[in-house]
Each structure stands twice: as C-alpha cells, then as structure tokens.
Length: 489
Image (cartoon, rainbow, N blue to C red; front, side, top):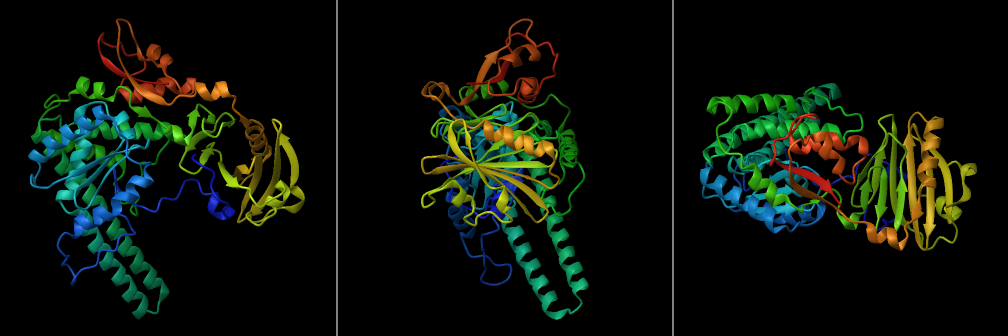
C-alpha cells in the first residue's frame, strides 16, 4: 500500500482485488480492451499500427506494474536469452523492446510492435535459463503470429454482429443466445492462440538450444505457486470457455506432447547455475515503497504503521490497499483516506461514503492510544464492519465484509483493528525488503533444513515455498554444491 487514497464509495472499495484498467497478454496474454484499432476498411490495417499501439500502451503498462525494475544481472540474462531466441524464431527480423517490471506478480506478456514484459516475480520463480526462455519464446510467438491484431479484428467483428442482432431481432432470448455464442467463439479463438503460441514457442526454444521440456516444467511450477498463494490451496481444473486461456492441465499436457515430438527428456541446455547466479540480490515480494507483508502482519516503514490479521487470513499488498481473506467468506481491505475537512471521526463515518450505514452502530474508541471510530453497515446482501484510526490528517481504514457474519467475523475485525499501532524508530530502521539469496547446498542438507533460513514467510509455509522455488521434494537429499534460492531480508 502506497500513500493514502482519497475517499471512495463503499461499493467500489469492497472488491476482492484492485481493478486494473488493462487486460494484458499473460501466461497471461491479452491486448488491452481500451485500445481502439480502426482500419481503412475491414481487414486492412494502416502501416506501423502495431508499433503505435505498443508505444501508446507502454507507459500505462509500466505504471500499472510498479515501474521499471533495474537489475544489471537480470537484465543481461534476459537480453542474452532474447537474442538467441530471435535468431531461432520464425521472424529473425522482428525487433523487440524488453522491459523488466517492478512487480512481485508472476507475469509475462507482449504488446503489438514487439513490446515484451517480464516481472521480477516471474524471474524469481523460474529455476533455470531454459524456463525463462520458454516464457519469452511463448510471448514472442504472439508477436510473430500477429495474435493481438487478429484478436482485435475478431472482437470488432463480434461486436458488429451483436449490434446487428440487437437491432434486427426482437426476440431477446435469441439475441442473448447469439451474443453468448459469439463470446464463446471468441474465447476459444483466444485459447487456440495460447496453445499455438505454446507450440511455436517450444519449437523456437529447441532451435535456440534450450530444453524443450522447460515449458511444461515451468507451467507446473506456476500452477503450484498459484495454489500456494491461494487461501484454500486449490484452483479449478475445469475449463472455462469464457476464459482467454486453456486450463493449466491442458496446457501442460500439450506442452509435454510438443516436447516429445522433438525428443526424449534430457536434450537441450538448462543453464541453471548461470541463471540462478544472476538472481542473487533480486528484490522479492513487495516494493519497500508499498510496505512489507511479514507472515500475517503488514508493516510500512514510510508511514510508520503496522497491523496483523488473525490466523487463517492471507494478506495481499497492492498499490493503494492491503487486501486479505480467510477462505471462509470473509474479506478485508485496509487503506488510507484524507480526513481534511472532517473535524470529528464520527462526522467522517457519517459523511456519506458508506452505503447502508447503521446509524446507532457508530461509536468512538481508541486503538493503542490513537483516536478511532467503528461502525457497521448492511447492503446488497453483505454485512460490513468498518473502523477508522486517525493519525494527524490521515484516517487508516479497516473494512471487513461477509455474506454470512457470525461471532468469528466480529472477533476477526476486532483483533485486526486492535493490532494497529505506530512503529518505533528502531522498528522502522530494522525493516528491510526481502531478496533472493543464492546459496550452495552442503553435504547432508535437505529442503526441510534449509527452509528454516527463509525470512518474511510464515514458519509453517516456509518449506512449501522453498520446495516450489527450487523444484525439490521435502526430504530430498540435496547434492553438495547444488545452487538454490532462499528468500531472506
């Protein structure tokens, strides 16, 4: 969470995630919905349009993902991989602009015109050069196959067809059916592009001399990491036909099949030691300017504040708020608001930014010596507990939401609110960001033994994260000298 945000309507504040105005390509690859392409006539796009689109969207992408991350070692590793992949690609004349993004999310995507993006979170998760190459070759395949422009043309055609149906057909059921049919068709079109990019990427990967099985291996790692981050530790394997991406098991299976057509496991280079060495010191997790998540606590060095959530909650930091959920139907949002113009906390809570506020629930209190106010609200089937703690002109807001409130819901809200406090100068000075530390295993080392040295991770989850980051089993005997990743502060 960065600087305090302005007051917002409650309905827009209580979403489970920050709304991003860009829909991007991702092991996550989608062209931004906001882009209007236009053409001289159907199917004919003006020259240099792809590059113009990428150039226009680039600043928004960088801003959305926390800016550019500068790391000489990581930048050299990426540039070297891209150079080899370009030479081995279907279009060696295509030029690329690569940007390393300052985001802990695991993501890579492409924009028209050869704009490639990789987050530092993805670099930290990859375990060798071939896995990074697999991701980049997939994104380059989208560019060389002109997928973004194909999607746009398909979207424009679908929109036109839907508009015609709405104008001509009076039967609403038939209109809805036709619109749904075109949506499903467009979604499958996008899924086919993803699988095609996987196939092209694996072929390019192999021609560049890398392990063709790296694609399926990294897909498995991403799937495990997604489950690790999930509150319930589960993700659905059922295909979603309105999704632009095939489900992960389908992609893994197809990636393995594509690699087998090339050769048996063991071919191609992985270059693990070289890659991991380039990651030493890489920032991991939250940017210091956004505060730190340490286990179930949030601490912000610049703002000098801290709070904790009860056991069972998983915290997620974003640019303008801290979010949390417990997997049992309770969600939390913590952010800051400007209280200038509000003489009292009661007046602020009653100023109209909360829908469905229960008037007699508002009462003043104190939290660790700081003035505070709490209240309750009910709207649209949701129950809310709201608390605001004042420091100077800033109000720090806790908002808990549940459709099935009970005593645990109230207890969790109270515990979180009561944990809010100001950090001492000594505590602020001790706060340091998490980074990737590269180590070599010693004789007798096991993942269980080495995971104890991880920092900033809940003790009960350290081993699981270590296993995912290093693609090892819990009680595996590690070969002396093996290069491994640790997360430390």
